[in-house]
Image (cartoon, rainbow, N blue to C red; front, top):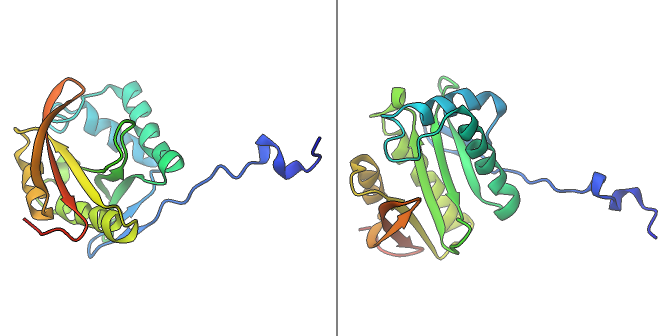
Length: 185
């Protein structure tokens, strides 16, 4: 038997650090408890969540915690996107892995009050740079519904090219991808 108290499950080092990413206007940081109300409101709004899975507050809490927890499982996950000038939360961006896929996926959401200001482009570009240049992932992808014109524009600006159709959560989506060092489409 080992009597070293640092080896017990109660004292494990099961922690991770979420890297902070900075852009000209944005800070990408870890989720915080005080971020949840805006996150839940976004998922409850049928216009904002039109291309997501709309969720009531209880489901939103599970999604919020799951996204935060991805950092512990994969060392990759979702960031809260904060406007530097105001400290206001403007959305979320992720560079994460789905359970059944070895290719890192990018995702982005801007809260409706912040639409049209380029925050999704700026945050997603930072997440993609982190994935391809810092983590050195060989490829990234985004899954986007054909009707989600704003996300398709972001994907195009990021140089993601359409690869194939698939289905996620019963919805048809297109896979858009870019390889590290690959051409910007």
